[in-house]
Image (cartoon, rainbow, N blue to C red; front, side, top):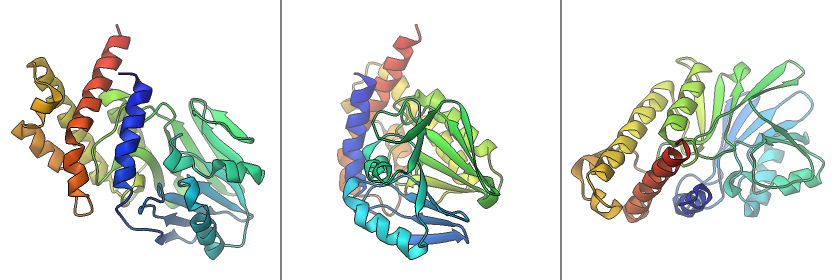
Length: 284
């Protein structure tokens, strides 16, 4: 299966996930950093940075959430948005890019971003953004998508993860495979310390321990699926494996929609396997 098709399949599952969670709650992390939580079908979590002269926004939810996003921005400050930072190109993170580009706002994104806008700055590797005394650092990784970017805010001791981590759904390292997933989390961990706040695209703020645990679980999930495949089991057969069932329970929490979680079990097993086989094939 084509990697792009894997993205589409995962995004369909993710929309189901987004019908759960806290809707439109804004949390203050510091005097200059706020989080607008997604959920309720509104799209991804949003980072809002208050700089001396303007606002900087990390991800822009789905397009239908424009009014909610603008309302929350105006409640925080009457300053204009000067910069949008995208963690990757999926529609639930970039749905209002066109609105902001129409307002002559620059949009920072990966060179591999799949989409268009009137005003954007694409980069590959690392990027340092300086606004007065504030520094924001961007790092390309490849895990959930080809266009993943980690954003590090040293002043606030915070790292924005995009979708390389969530606390309430299956792992989704469809672009970079398990190697890319582990490398992305290791990079995020290298940017922080024991007090760093890791902000995912979906779900609650994570700690260093949360990321380390998640990385171990992702490896267990991947390795068990590959092992079962080598035994000749189909994805449907794999869902009956007690060891894999135990691993997958570790990805759920009290906010997880159990009906959707159970219904998408086989599909996410299949997607993980197809990603592994596709990446293994391309490596030879």
